[in-house]
Length: 207
Image 1 (cartoon, rainbow, N blue to C red):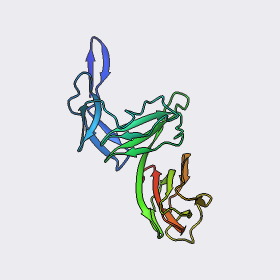
Image 2 (image 1 turned 180 degrees about the vertical axis):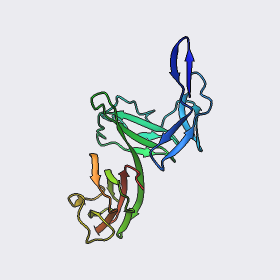
Image 3 (image 1 turned 135 degrees about the horizontal axis):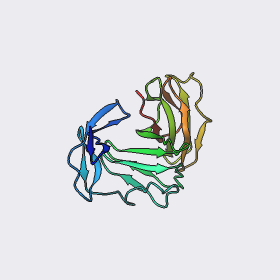
């Protein structure tokens, strides 16, 4: 909506368009001191909140503790993120947006977390999608032994590898972020070579 006030043209946002879907979300009432939060299909003012370590500050690029992003919240991080051995737990409908300033034009990647849970067999982690990218991964050895998995760009264990084999020792875990992401348009297939692992895939949410 555009209005004219004292000769100055102003634009008022009445909705936000998210990348997943994409879906246009109407903006409801936002009282003073509130922050934006998604409730159902509407963006409204909600109390500022956070998980075990509080909200993830936009400027916090190296985590100093585990972080939980509350349900229906989006956390923003500028110019990259170092997990520093810590975990990010996603609530229902929450996202993590990595923001970079490219010559002032801005940009970002909204992450979708796909929690595959403890697995011992091969599994299709993400279905094929034209613009699908693998942004990161977290893997934990689950059964007190060694484990090995292979991430493949496709729908079976003959598909091309997305990255090197991931091998873990007893109770070991690893987390890695791939910057702008790895092209995974043919899908993300998790091949379990041995052991039992917990796997979380972070994608750009393309479908």
